[in-house]
Image (tube, rainbow, N blue to C red):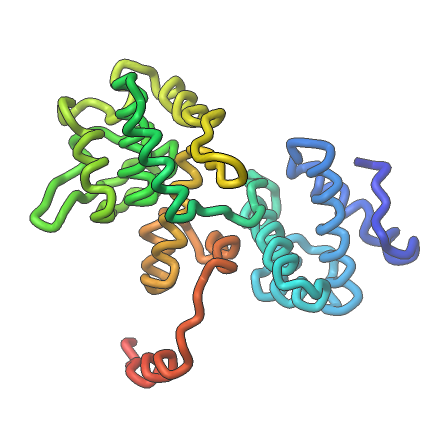
Length: 298
């Protein structure tokens, strides 16, 4: 990483080199390629912050959301590149604590890929076709609670049958963990929820009742990884994360921002940046009518 040289003039790289490389190292990029990518987008942002925004080399000031948005808007021309670079910078901001030290970095910031309707049909058919009852339960649980209620794989691994309640309007999931919340299962996945809960006690984990927490998470992360359904160009990977992504995008245009942040188990709206390319703008007449009906609530 010390040998990295950005596409900047030496006179502009020299003042920020140590700042960029030190921060990049503390982020612990998982691969050499991602380390190069980290250095690249950090260098361009820090250079812009100094030369255009007039900032000093201060970590907390450097990664304010409004500043990062302005940075990518003025640095990149492609809308998709702007979205990706802003998402990456927001991940860096998330990794920097209030004391300016790096605590963690989530590196999965690429554009999300939801299932299509056809893809969901393939996935559902694959689950139904499994002869092994354990595989079927895993599949039904992923469909119902990741695809129907937006749970993460780690949250599904901790879910017990007693966390799922059947009401007159359908199933409701009391999601356990750090992002505790209550989420209704989408009606399309009611049957999958029934199949996933069939024959297990309230205290039992929905999947891997006899396994350790680590083993449950491991099995879920690998479940369906090498399985493909469909044929030719339309082959579909089966995975809990992609089902959750599909659910988030399904809710994106239906729920107010603050509600979606909470119900999806996020801490702040920046986590939704990578989904925005899948959002649909309202027709202008509907938009104007909705805006005119708003009222001041506080």
